[in-house]
Length: 486
Ligand SMILES: Cc1ncc(COP(=O)(O)O)c(C=O)c1O
Image 1 (tube, rainbow, N blue to C red):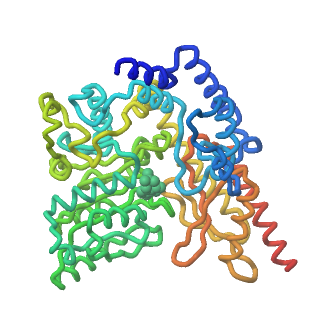
Image 2 (image 1 turned 180 degrees about the vertical axis):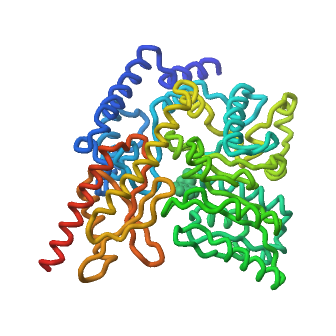
Image 3 (image 1 turned 45 degrees about the vertical axis):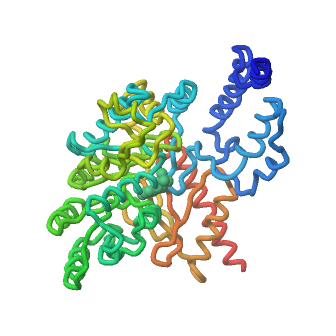
């Protein structure tokens, strides 16, 4: 048996490359990523979007017993992965809500993956868990939550919303039989992951009330109050109120003070989705704009958006932290050693996950090495860029422009002299996508096909926005001339 074990050990040796082999692999990755970084700011060399179906070529490379030569492997990634679709690392990514990808965070991930600290349970890595709780405490302070709040670094905003909604459900003691009487108040502008979370949490049969919006796409709290009064009159149970600190479509910020007053009066759980807008609280403008956010019961906020980290980090914060523990803390016999050392809250006790990546390092490392100042400056820059884009777009002909941006999303569309405006704008965005140097996305608001510029990529600067405006203008003119010819 010993011989056989040694034989298998020899055969599995490639899983532990020696320092020479590690160097070769590492240098190949670094060569590739350095080339990527050196061209990412050039929209000609590194387009923001390539409108082609790609990746099929990958399928010809079967997973084999022997594997492939590393050079060939990097060539495959370059040709079949990094060569189409949205280039999320590009500053020209002005669609949806752009993510980040700052370099120092990637080194945090590298470090975390090499050391593979088990960050789910305090016993297994007190330092890793303390680091994450330290980050949570910092975000609690930023939003104005008390020390008794708790939070979790989840994989993104969708899972963070799920965590908060489950905590809200359990805090209200909602059982299956109660669900059809429970009412959730939200707006049409709530992100679709909220609906997913409601469904996953078994709350599909709750009553959903979509409260109308004011001219700035914010929840109309007069209408909210009316809806609650009507529901109570009908014997229903108002339970959950969901607001947004930056909606995806328009970047609107709901009136939190008014909503908090209503939530207090009718004893609703007040949840705020700050996935996109949350980190604007690091700016003076944002912290004033979000007044009242501290009166919510739960908030979610995405460092992979407003803190410019690579995809994979969304945070749930719950003001009364005990509620998170009530929903997610479980005991198992095989975990009994882990409870011996439990001086800090473990992520496993306040989230659905047990084994998870050590997410803290990708956030802590950039904050430690850069300090807050450059993050603040980048956020200020994005707010100003959105204002600038809005002011410049106002000079365009045939434009119907949305409200002055509250955060960093600008909505607009063009009105053709004749014909269908939705089709006209669809054609414009098709041309922008074909051009490829910048990427913008569209949405439909009340049946109206709307174009939007979402400015949050940390590599989006003044030259990016000037280029985007120039391309938008060109493509609008082209579409207009084609319409005249047709
Ligand atoms: C307002 C808002 N909430 C939630 C989400 C979902 O977050 P994630 O994509 O990180 O799951 C998004 C994503 O863009 C968003 O804009």
